[in-house]
Amino acid sequence: MAHSHDHGHHHHHGKDQTEGRLWISIILNFIITAAEFICGIISGSLALLSDALHNLNDTTSLGISLVARKISKKEANRDKTFGYKRAEIIGAFVNLITLVIIALFLIKEGVERFYNPQPIDGMVMFIVAIIGLLGNVITAILLYRDSTENLNLRSAYIHILSDAFSSVGVIIAGILILWYQLYIIDTILTLIIAGYILWHSYYMLRQTINILMESTPADIQIPNVQQAMTEVNGVLDIHHLHVWRLDEKNILLESHVVIDEDNMGHMESIKSSLKKLLSTNFDIHHSTLEFEFEPCEEHHESPCN
Image (cartoon, rainbow, N blue to C red; front, top):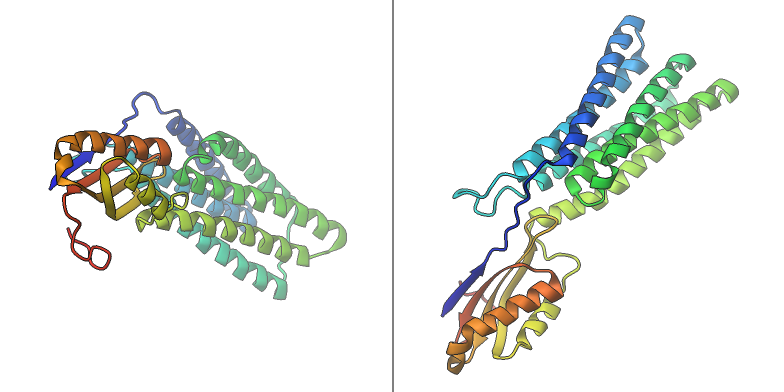
């Protein structure tokens, strides 16, 4: 029996522009939050204080994303042999759970407001909404490019986007309430925003949990990988095949490879062919292959380690 292990770690050095954009976003949101808190206390406006709490939540989510990103870049060590890459997945998970809580709170608020409409100060409402919207739009622009490739940053981006929609909703509701006394629009828009948050959160939470649970990546079919590996010259059988994601970018594989004892001298060549196949066809750059001359007994029923 022989054992082959290939890491294929990639480290990225140099200035991280994403971190710079996150810092700008955090500072911007913190300034808006502080300003709204001060103005809310001075004016006695609950609307301003409520929006300040919303913005504080955004600032916190951006902070979580930044810390998770910094941790994920730490080098592997004896305790964390795969490195800290999953820190960003954990950051995304925390942010998404808070988003779900916010969405459920919005639904509760929306329903309560429907049965017990609150008096609304139109001018304060507009000022709050426009300040909030401006901050959210700038932050969303800063984070958009990175959010398309990274679950951690995407979760922070959805936080910001949901707040931007909330601000737009407040502006629309304010106009309709002031002009037509349509108080129900406040509830309708609140429920639409909550639904949007829950829809995005569900989809992203599913991705995040699948990575943390080491599920087979959605774009990889185990039977296809098994068949392709078995077709490599010199391979008799492939079993105990496991494929999972370390993070969003790195797919890992481990497998038992059965070869004929006469091919012992060609083991390195077979191993190279398998690794090339996995890398080229399935984007798997880290594989652990255990070579055997005889299949494990009853390997389909019980794994042998």
